[in-house]
Image (cartoon, rainbow, N blue to C red; front, side):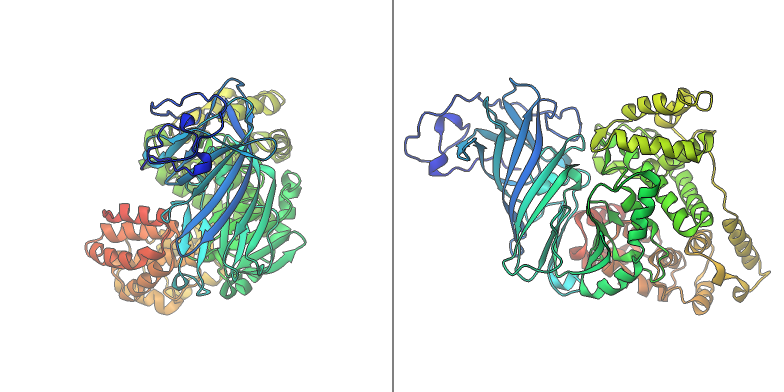
Length: 639
């Protein structure tokens, strides 16, 4: 990344600037003394994935003023950062950036006037981007940075009309884990929480939304929108979206945004959204974010969902027509407590966000659909986790993981999600549900709007649960979960009779003891279907798949979870109708959960790699950068 400093005549304070070759200006007034900036390489701070020295100077509030240019594919404008000086004598501010065009940096004085500040960009550090180092004289409590994002910003996905359901362009952000720095210069670490306000100008015929208060339900003819986030959030929850969107109200504080093709099906699918919020409140205390709306993104979205406060993102691939995939919505809602309200302070502690959320999600699903569905989901998660633990790096086989020298994107695997959930299941088994629920409500209250470490949780757990109910759990057992690799031998394995029944029917069918039409599939849940298809891995040939397809129309399946597994079997058997559907699937869907394993299976097959590369090259323009990255790794190709 190039290092530069732009300057205008009124800002040319030669004495303050490190490198100002080519900038001419009239003689400026005498500036206040500013400490010279060092030229040494900037090290990461307390958080190994951020350059921010937030223990010395901390951002407390952001004010954004941005314009979205779809032709240039940029967000440009400025941000004002209000600062808290933790160390009064510290005279520099270090921000995280990644491929940002930094145009100007000024102090905002008490009277609103701007005063130029010395600044420089440090060395490029791959997935961490580039530190922006700003000289910070005494008495400065707010800094303005003028900048523009890159057209290739990793955290922004710009879609053309042919890549959306509406035929209109679309923009959405994905800031987690460290991609907020690709569209805002800030302290990009979950350890720092701040409030913000924003003014965003977009095309007059498109609706601008943010993960904040103030979202409109129809377009503003001026193209200008104002937002406010009064609750402090970490940077990875910064969210913006712009598109041809409609709104459907679900309840007094819930609703759905989607393109017109999806708004009806989405509103019907998520009709129980208000009820889900009420269930969450009954379990673990009040919902503290005002509204809870969902935004259905285009199918290129690389994840199932993203828990941005007040505006969770979801993929259209969960709209199955029968509500069978609502666990994902329950998950994103649960983050309103575990993750958004109480946040992991670093990505080593991701289980504090995700493990708690998967447990909370399971409790919501149990309230909605009963214990049997919860047990089925738990069994699927357990089996997947056991497979992961068999092959995972030893550093990744416990809840607290060493990520200090790795891309924080590698934090996101099954262990913090499912092992974290089974840790809480184990606590529920040892203490009983009533005691654990009381503890969790108090925990969310105690740490509300804070970022904490695993050690903070451990200390609180010891004081408020273990010592309050002695003899049930030891700290050594807690530490086995947190720090020792592998699932503890005393973990509680979930059991589901529903899957045992499916296993028996599958075995009998494969042994020709029963015919396909005798399988009681009308009584099966989507989770039992998934279990059935997972158990057929490598066991089918093309002829058997044709018979199954004729009986169940699996190639025409509209439930993406079932369709995905069927397409995996189609790759194994080289079942042509399935391969034809697979081509359309890869061109339509960018969700990493599906695309990465499908490309990997094709790459590992005897026949599919070259075909997959050809399909990928056609699908690539519609994929998010994360999907492209994962697909290219799977296929063994590079740009």
